[in-house]
Amino acid sequence: MNKILIQLSCSLDINDTVLKKRNQVENNDKRLEQIINGIKKFVEKKYNADIIFVDNTIPEKIPIDKELEKLLIDNNIQIFHDNKNIYGSINKGAGVIESWLFVKEKLKNYDYILYFEPRLYLENFDFINNFLESPRNLFVYGNDKNHFFTGLFGIKTELLLKYVDKFKHPKHFINLGCIEQHIFNFIKNNDSYETLEKANVIWYSGFSNYKNLIINF
Image (cartoon, rainbow, N blue to C red; front, side, top):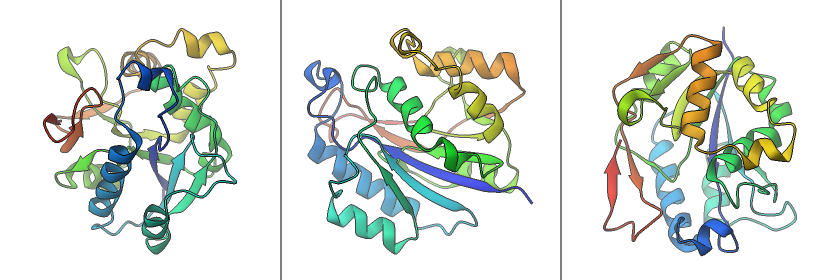
């Protein structure tokens, strides 16, 4: 039987970042509210898989929000956090890759990874159920089918680690560009994959008041 790990990934503290100064990310309080709501929805389903929560912005010695911590512990979700968000403070995609590097040794113990950013809100569990019933490289296309939506996808661990192992030098992060395009090109050139029409999530834009701009994806 395949061993599956579900990674819930987010950045809790982004106030002192280049992206925040450019008004490209939501403030900490609203992010936390969105993340807690997203996890509450996520745990409505029971999973036959190990689950981890990964944040790479809060130092290990500093506790995360108490409500969030209790929610994770009560649902048997293992918490990993440390301030490893070096290039992610400049490029969102770089932060995602840094989170995989942070828990790389943990990932090695599994055959497949289901990656989910709980700042998104699940409309239903169709994508997740589809992947868990038949683990494989599973994505949703972005516009024009030339990139992947990276807020929710499934992937072979071996392939994901092959991808992150490409980032051995700071220039690889600095020159990353758009991770949605970058990882699409990598997967397309290295393995087969399947797609579903929708991820069935609600995305809150980082550029504006999330109450006024929500996008179904």
